[in-house]
Length: 224
Length: 351
Image (tube, rainbow over the protein chains, first blue to last red):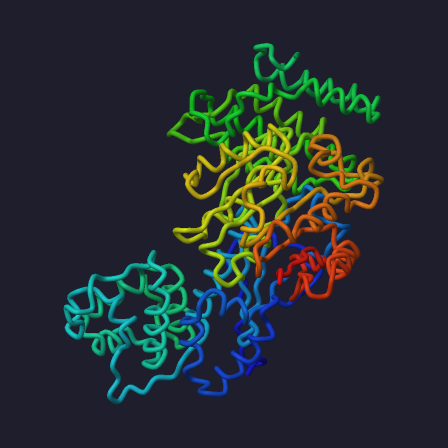
């Protein structure tokens, strides 16, 4: 499982030079995390990916190794040096997310975790069965209101800036992968016009990149 | 004083450079520190740079010249700075971008500034030549999700200490507790706790230093936590007489550096930060042991404590010391590592 996902390793998209990381330490909660992640992957390997995104920050953090700088000298009060870069490795999938741009370690950890959620949504695919397929509510929430399968009870459309968008994006990618990258087929299932689904895909850079990567690999034209 | 003259920018920068050469070849600890005190701005009033109004302006090209000058100064000095563990060139250049982030705002073709361009030259000169800490230059430090005002006389909160707040957050029922932060400095820990408390929770924080008390109150006010976090001036437990036996928990990051290590500290710390907040006496544990002695009478039954230490050996010593006060007095004592793997914190509960 891990070796398969190791192929998916992606670095947090940022133009900064990666930090020199010399020491890898597990986060303290990892003893509990190992139990958690093994129960997740053994219950159903296909549903695990969706489950990662439903974990709380603490639970997700517990499945990660955090790379830190090796202590050079006593640290603490002795030292005035900003070493705020954080790199998280999600152990069940091997996905790596990092953040270096913020001035506080705490905020870089939050950014890295947020980035990890996006990468999990983009990189971890769940197989879906098209017969009798009903989009999960997270997917319905990111669809435009004109979708014919979207009832009024779903509420207003959630956009890419909302943290809940990630779950919907993951479900949408699961569907697009299942229909081999065909936007028209996906649109039919979601009760949308092909143009409307294209616009939704293009509204988020990482979503667009993931769909286009798939389409290119299938010999299809990328969406523009 | 030379920096206060209203010189055109270019000549100001070149005169800064000439000075650099001069003092570079006559460097001793004494000249470096007298230079530093010479350059230090008046302590009051000092609003952090990022909170000052955009009342100055310059052209993008002038600002670019500043950046190029500042980068080359950083590069040419980096090797000297690294001798005592100071910042590398890339770390200095990252600080420079943060300085500009705090000091500038682009409005079309004009760069608006929160201080005049000449002052930026002088601030950067102080940073490189006098080793004035970056956080004192900009007057703030980013810590957890906070931006805290700091200035000379107040310890700059360290990233390691961010974890103390998480240790408190892990205590059952912490949200409605009465907490104490002894030696609060900028108020970092107290504010970090105050922000995650529930409706009935409170923090009382103490510090001996008047500068620290003033800065901590400023920071508490900026986060509108006056109802939750109270700052009192005084020596460790002394301002808490009325709360003895009532505290749900007590945290502290007291000075813990052994006195003999103070002269060898990197200049940013040793020459600029208050020794009151760093020097822990001969073995570094004078204050830690004093805090341990006061724990029993300060905490209520079941109360929690967490101390930051110099790491490893000090942590072990503190655990032994507290345990030796009687096997039934404290329980669940733990040593917790910081993000760099140093066993930094000692925590436990009162019976």
